Image (cartoon, rainbow, N blue to C red; front, side, top):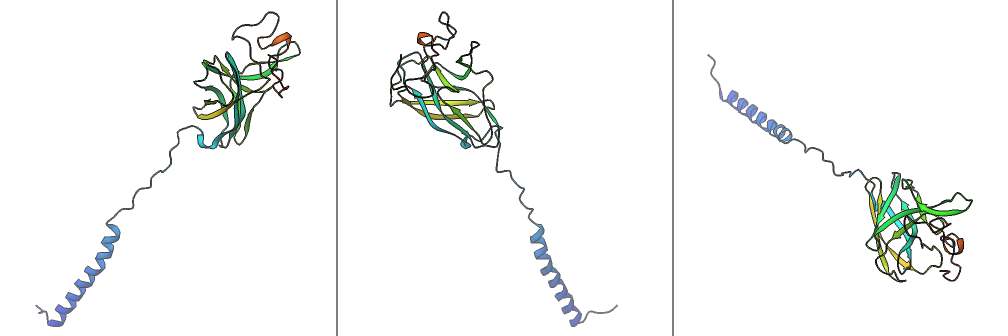
Length: 209
């Protein structure tokens, strides 16, 4: 049997120390697993309401009955939307109305069926003589200078709240009762056989009611 001399013992000691030193960084590298990736974003399945905006929203002043709302709704999202309704404490019901032929060669207003399209990156114009919000059954007068809070409702569940100013306006007369038609006239006809929405496009300088 060979006996270990001093030089062999020193060599073995150095080798053991070297192996120990090499194993430390390897253990440090393999001892901790990388943290799993996390999903920071979450989709609620609807459009980003922050990218929906309104501009110049206003309501026609009225003492009772019903009145109309106008303005511009802008869709800054990448999704096509459909406006299907609205609600407000200032009316018992809000309907979407449009201009349509009345069957006699004239034009009248009626409730929209299926909602109003608002394409991605596009605008929906609510204006006298065109599409507009109809506030039905207002519980108290809406005076110029008042503010009305309204929430728009879209088909995908998205909602958009805004505040509309109440203004004087001579057109946009809404004097019919829902479900009723004055004798010989369309339900949206106004005084003297004229369409009650006549004057939607511009004020004639005075209220013809």
